Length: 162
Ligand SMILES: [Zn+2]
Picture 1 (cartoon, rainbow, N blue to C red):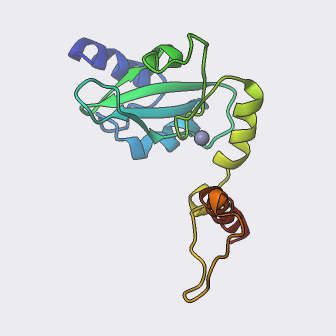
Picture 2 (cartoon, rainbow, N blue to C red):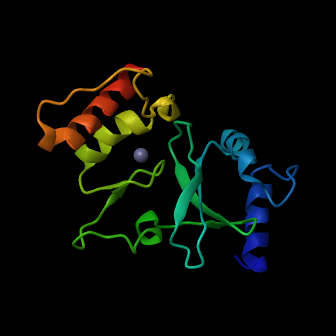
Picture 3 (spheres, protein in one colour):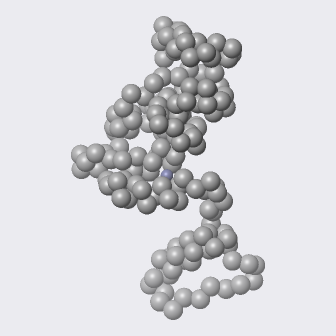
């Protein structure tokens, strides 16, 4: 983001009564800014030279009517006007993809995205990790050709039980 745009953004924040904030604003200040603006804010960044290895820094947990996406890079923010263009290099058969902004998984239908959100938006999302059986216990498999699938199912089941 160039200096001119940065000042534009600074002015925008000041118009909304945020002139008491120190600039540049750090991502951990975003939740309080959301409260003051009554606008949800998602913040993304990237860690490669091409800007493709994107990851979310902060995804709004607030249920506000309007949400905007920002790119945070080099201590500055840029407004992501179109999230699908921001992710445009990832496409499948030219179909429009729907994105989970929390984990950047993509889906081709609203139904699939809604089902994903049931789990991905859970407050205890980070607790849903794979857990191993108690030390000394053994897993038994009847059909060895399905072993990897059964391990996958067993681990998934344990992650929901624990
Ligand atoms: Zn997700």
